[in-house]
Image 1 (cartoon, rainbow, N blue to C red):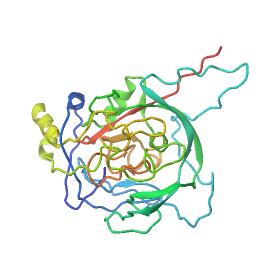
Image 2 (cartoon, rainbow, N blue to C red):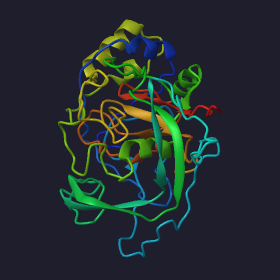
Image 3 (tube, helix red, strand yellow):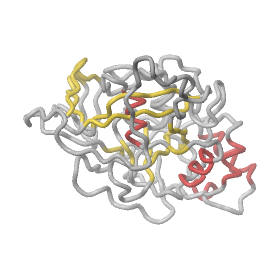
Image 4 (cartoon, rainbow, N blue to C red):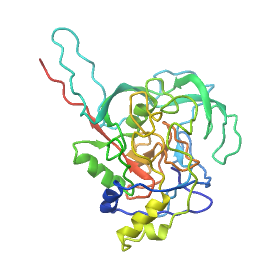
Length: 344
């Protein structure tokens, strides 16, 4: 997912939960983004706030911290910004008085436990490009085809995490087509009714990259055959998608024309080290903005969609779309706290 683009494909906010619910049962068609835009990397100011009601399916607003490779390897130095409501791990009990840790997560969720690093450096060794698609020899460029295997230096504070995450994109069912056209608020509400919540972007990243902090859920090199990515962009009828008075059948038909979603779990290579499916590609996923402390919005997108040009990596986040945004390539998955251990 990306924000501003030079070909000005303007999207819409469509806070229609009923449309999203219907779309969960549908399969659709196509998009490729040729837009190129500036993107902040690292600490500085967030990307410019889009005009009210606007969103675009392009490629460049995903951001991720950039570290000076010559800086000292600080290990746990720096600061993390975990949200207070996000559960951190607790030490596992041992010995005869141990507490049983059976059934910590619901059957449809994956248990994730590990140390999340706030700032990670990878080293690109092939196919580096800037946000304008010009060749780049930076160690951590905006786009990269291949990273040095095993090179993942932590320059930020490590924070222990222990949580549950949906195995698949919502509705979290093997073989289901992921829901789209749902706002951040609606996604949050759909998680809450299940006793779950939206994932923090730090939780989402950990579940995607695994203990080795890999750039991609499946490894160190971009593989367009592993996940549902790199489909050509098709120009959407945004006036229709933005029209609250339009017949739902017409909106559904337009999304069917555009969509290239595949059934959840149908690409076995698109699996994270923890076993979470389809985290990069298919649909962009709503998460809670923890990394940038809720600025400019509480909402972020993670993972990228199926459109060519999205980076589809674990670390980048898209911050440029507010909580009421809904669009044809954006969905979500849920997280939850681990269940309380049971005493013997």
